[in-house]
Image (tube, rainbow, N blue to C red; front, top):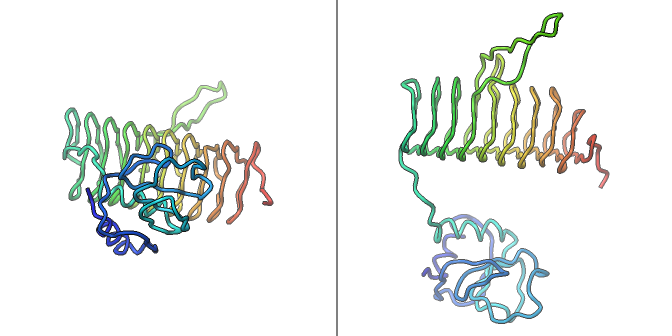
Length: 295
């Protein structure tokens, strides 16, 4: 049980603007969703239209964008509901499994440099010239090889593969193919999320770079020499072919992007798109092939 007063004090320290209506001394017994509400808990309403027309009982504490009388005993009214609600859960009600410092079955070569408070899960392989920044978490069954620098406060989720040579070859007149050896590495800057099963391949000569604050969803493929600008997002299943570059805050939703292309600052690539030419800054494209959306 947590007093509402403590929740509000936390929001103030996080500089999340809010207004409160209710009793700050009431106690909250965890959290639940709006559709499967559990009595005595905190819940979140993203939009007033999501509220039931046939409310069976009042909510005990609701995080909501604007006041709606009669639906709750206590209200946290804020335009930053998602941030407020999930920050409160993580701080007061989270019960995540703690990883060991180094899990069972994990191999770490002598050349790996590990920062402070790093956690590495079970059955991982870290083999090569690898650096891990402070507070970085690596979950189970992750492979990191060759030349890889991972910054501070990063999360590498289970099954990620980082640092392999990419698919690149030369061929002779008989079309016999010879794979090209890669000599670059991977540089993952601070506060990056790498989702489960995602592949990030090393550069041919220079590094593949994942900028500060980037978030990469599950089962994405980031090919050699890609450079992701700060705070860019790749949604599940995105494939970036070799030497793609994005600006800051680019958003690519489960799309395929041809090699050598530029994606500008704040650009959005719509779900399922196939991008075959550069995308300008502040533009949204979608479709196959991807085209600019006017609205």
